[in-house]
Length: 432
Picture (tube, rainbow, N blue to C red):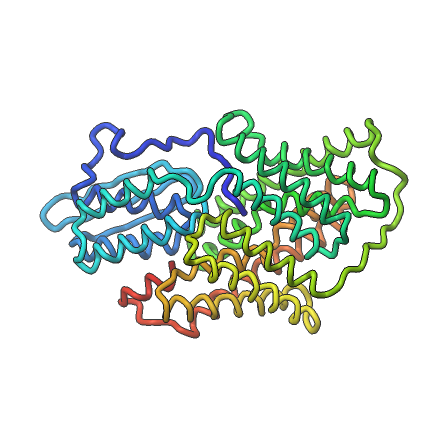
């Protein structure tokens, strides 16, 4: 869900690359716009559509190929020979505030209200801007997201406490990994190890609690369920290379987490923190606590996704619409159909809000899909395979695939509800 630090990717500004096009030139602006959109979490099909529209307005033809770690584009000018550029970039992170600002700049340039030179300068200001929220608040957001998810997974007071502790530890690790290169490489495995130890420790001192719920809730922020969903959407829109690469990237994160869980299990046995295996009856809490957990988790996502304070209401609305649709659809349908209904509900609301307020649809879609994405299902599948339960592991993996396909199908269908003309500038606002 959250973007992990990228340690081996050249993140230099194009201004520091020898002989790169000047940022004040139209070509330089297009290159920097591409890098900015990719950096702040735009999928391949959205990035290519936006860049093509922008290049056309500036008098260029464009052929673009976007991958999770690179962008290749050929710009064709009638008065000059075609130019091909390759930009090395880190996998995109979700930053809703910067995404909106970059989107606004792109549209202002396309409308002719802002010159490319001024647009490029504004992109630089956005890129160099400090985080919207202080570090302590980000760590607190990690903590409350994990605690909320523990409740949404059916946990009681003990599981919520364990989830809060695991989320706090993950927040500290994530902040530290941005400064330590080695930890950035091993963040999924280290986070899984920490969450596993926290889960077993809590279960040891609070008998009757379920350690697995605490482990998953502690890792929920790093689980690449959103990446899996985006990958399937890219495959559905025939962006085969980007979708395939993103799936394998998500798979590597799952494998690192599974390794961390295995090490954590062995350490828990040596300490010892594990007791005899027995079935756990989860503590029953009032139904209103589910709604409170969804509300608190959605509020924490405002900080984790760096959304503007003025857009916080839309982020929270996206999370609550997702939770409500899943809660009631699950009474009548299985997991796949429930995800399908939830995706349609979130997608329709996001499109309507974008059409009438101008707020990018991602402001509601991204937090809404966090509740819907199949990351926890994939993690459960991998841990079952690690425990040599092949049948359960493969069955869960198939269920994860169905949920992912259902999400993509629901999102694509929801776009038909308020689908504007493809040539409209407002269409770009809706899709972004």
